[in-house]
Length: 245
Figure 1 (cartoon, rainbow, N blue to C red):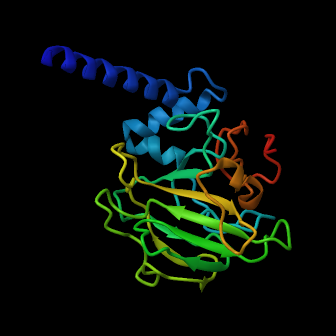
Figure 2: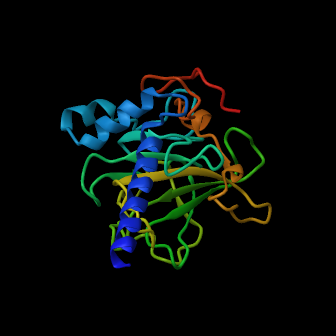
């Protein structure tokens, strides 16, 4: 009986691993060129990684936001690759860091008001009172994974748990990227998850985990950041060739 149980566990792990590999390679989806990039990053070769990194310390021409961290933008908005799916695509962008946890800085993408909920170890959310692309509505910017695997925070001391509505200017240092993944057993690479979240209509932020509550960051950063974009590199592009609708 014990052997049978062990065999079932091993088979289950193989099936799960195979599924994740298929998702990583995006064998059944569009934009297959992304799979090669992810594999290059996964191999960890310094030269390969350097070629994939985007550094944009100032907003792109005509765009209001700056890229909040240097790195490889490996998972895009509306990305269906694992651990996401076509039914539940990625709600933001993941910017993977070339260095160890706690090394790569994270900066405020725009002027706004920072909140850190009392129980948040690795995340901040920033209220933008007036959407620069749609004046009259509020939006929120979510920054996550700024802690190590054990939950030791890399967020700047200026934003302790319980922080409410602390104003920061665009470019303010918020913390450093990490690999904290909450209570999940799934390890993650060092990165920043960044998303634009809708207001809930009551002065708060909507649930970021629901794709419908988020916005495509492409026009806000002036870069091809939607999975539908067919671009060889993530860099400033005033009219990326993609349908971001």
